[in-house]
Image (tube, rainbow, N blue to C red):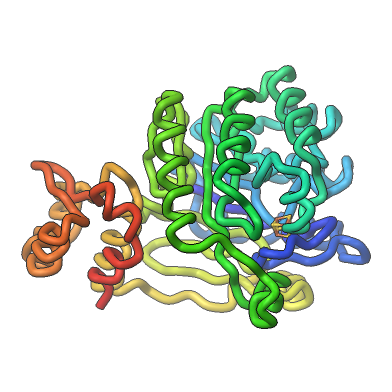
Length: 376
Ligand code: SF4
């Protein structure tokens, strides 16, 4: 099974926490970018084939920041070169302020069957303080409009551990998300990354984040509140109704292969990790010169594959399938990691069944510590 990730690196505003590859959309060569993206897709699909592809994820940046004609051009390109009857999931990342009837109609028309909506929080003052452009009411309206138009497979994407966020704020946001009856909720804690506005504020001592213990309590609240409402946690930060797990993201966690199209996108094809040029000029020039913007590709050694299999697989609540692992690598997880596994089990961070090796409840909270043990 294979997926395709397409990156649209344009945004109408820059959020204070964001370290993605993105550019302020004004004055950017958007039309030229879309043409180059099509060239890159054609060249790559010719080389690798897309018959076994099952998911498409259009992310960014903000794909929905494109104007009507540009957005339709992009969706047509995807239909012409990637969308085939075997595609089970076609997700578009949408920002609430762009979820207009016009854009939603285009998505329906061109085969989009899942939306991942970047709400982050339903608290207006928190939205403002993290640099988002929408309001809580706008997010609610956008999601309700999408549902009324038949786009019902919706993920509400939230954040926690925001500056000034209280547990009460978080609970209210979760309840407002649940009131919209989404199929999926993803909820990540804020990470302050270099080259972001928040990072600069933090260095100046001007960013007040919730204490670690409060953040752990918030995470506990998230798990119990969502589980109470019938959502099952299938990955550290992802919860869904049964049958609505993100197939595309499962490709990453299952360590399966995927195309990466667009500026700065990463891919994993025929055992090689690929990286595309991030800066706009380099992206456009490379596609013109060589048909793709790939700047590096490196074969993943078996050792690296095994490590990735462990730390990606353990992100899933189900854990690593020990039989699949043995079939893939001809060695059992115990032959390779017996000491580490015993130690982590002893510390109550891992547990084991006949088929799976998985994080315990405590292990979910200390995931990074567990993953570290499997890295060479
Ligand atoms: S978080 Fe999304 S909308 Fe905000 S700047 Fe980053 S890519 Fe753009």
